[in-house]
Length: 378
Image 1 (cartoon, rainbow, N blue to C red):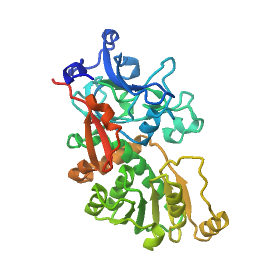
Image 2 (image 1 turned 135 degrees about the vertical axis):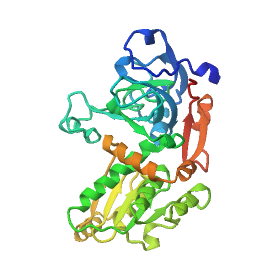
Image 3 (image 1 turned 90 degrees about the horizontal axis):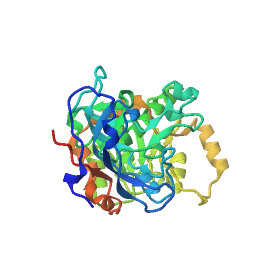
Image 4 (image 1 turned 180 degrees about the vertical axis):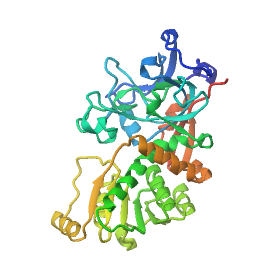
């Protein structure tokens, strides 16, 4: 392991970025894996971020962990940058600007989040239109996931347009922005689909009370809707988090609860739950799938009945993943409008980067686990 005094080698300065070669002789410590190799997680020295990676230098504050990170650590997913045999982990992120170019609207000390997905180099029509979350050819890159180093390192860089500035009051919870973008995008698409006809939703069902499900419920409450959240656990933080939002918490199934929602947001990726979600809506229901399922298991289904119900009830079922910049902006507004103390309770464990292995040791009461970095002293 290492001490906090050895962790940080950089310092923050309040001046415009000078693109010189001083970074070449420096290194930073980063949390890395070898793609495709299970349990290769380690902290290692890597070269300091090059100015070619972006004009803004950022000191890392936090990275959040999710199922994608677990899959990458297990060797099931992830791709290193070209010419590199390791990948710096971390896509859920929060940092503080150390250096920024003049005229960028960012200054040293600003709280920022880096956008995960970057457009493909061609680019395709969607990426060219700024809709890189809907990339058509799969040549996008993703920080900490696909061919771009992530944010779990002392310092990282990005261009100003790949950063979202947050309000200072979100310092303890801003790391939730990236998962919040998933449901900000989901709600945007639900609204767009709803405009196909008369749309006045009153009731929302959210399956799964993990971070994404809880944030989906939060936005539903902010929209003035009646929200029902479904999960299996009967104790721990989840029931109270849901009820303190003003939503209803269910441990029975959607079908058994007899709730007929106008909108369903599925956040588990569990096949039987997905099946119930896509068959449990009311007339003209819209069902959004955000959870990613494992493959290889078969779930019995009467496809004819599913088709008949969907057609006769004018239902829409769609999937969504990732987000573009306007979704980050919308998610930032949702976090800023939320009760910060409630958001802090959603982060159930904060682990120092010194003890990074503990963060991957799942505990029964975990909702969101966050790795914290010691902040650079001025």
